[in-house]
Image (cartoon, rainbow, N blue to C red; front, side, top):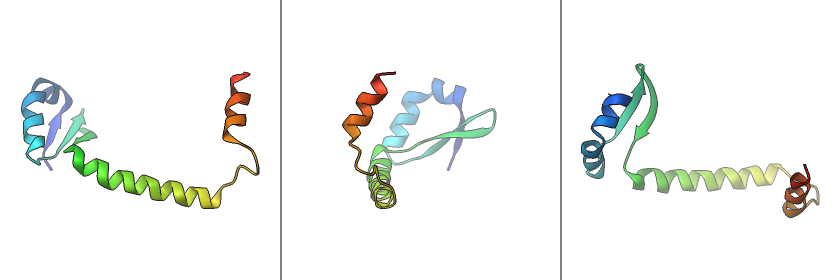
Length: 80
């Protein structure tokens, strides 16, 4: 996957977006270190949303509020 510096990405954003729309992906770097990926939206939304849902379901099976209601916890937090 091609890498591009943050400054260059900022300067060439319109061209990069056109290329991403065509399916290309880029890694954006800052001082030579990867910090972000520029990828077509469809790629991230499908896979990551499903993965996040599965992670939440697994978390729910192993954690309990022991009878507490989320609404009560929110209200309690607002007192402080």
